[in-house]
Image (cartoon, rainbow, N blue to C red; front, side):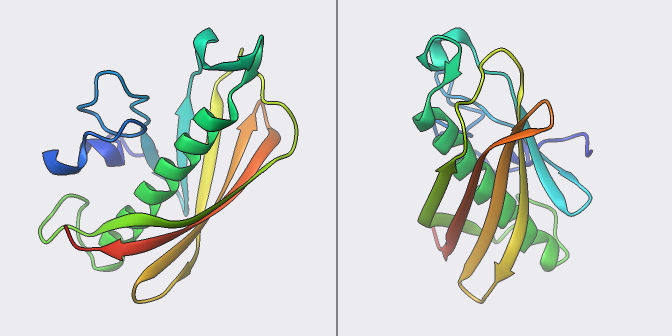
Length: 151
C-alpha cells in the first residue's frame, strides 16, 4: 500500500466532509490507499458506531462506502491523466447514485476493510464497486455512480 492516504493529498477546500475530511475533527476521517488496482480503506469502528450492541450502524457503513468510492473515483481520474492527487486543476466528484446491499449484520469488534474497484469510466461519470469485509468475510456490497463536477 502507498504511504500517504488519498484524503491527505487533497487541497484544504475538499477536506471538511464528515466521512472523509481530514479537517473535520468530529468526522470519521477515513483513509484510502491504493493496493494494486484496488483502493482499500481500513477503519476501526467504536462502540458508539453501533446499530445495536456489537453490530455496526448501516448509516455509518453507507457513509464510509460512499466517501471511499468518491475518493477512489477522483484518485483514479487524476492517475488516468498522469497526475498526482491534489494537483491543479482539481478533479472532483459528487455522488450521482448509491446502492448498498447489506448481506448480514456487520460486527463492531474488528476493523472494517472496504475494497473498491473502478468498474466503468465515461467522460462525466465513474462507477465504483465496493465490498466491506471483516476478517475476510464479506458483509456489505455497494456501487456508486460518481459524477464529475467543477467547484
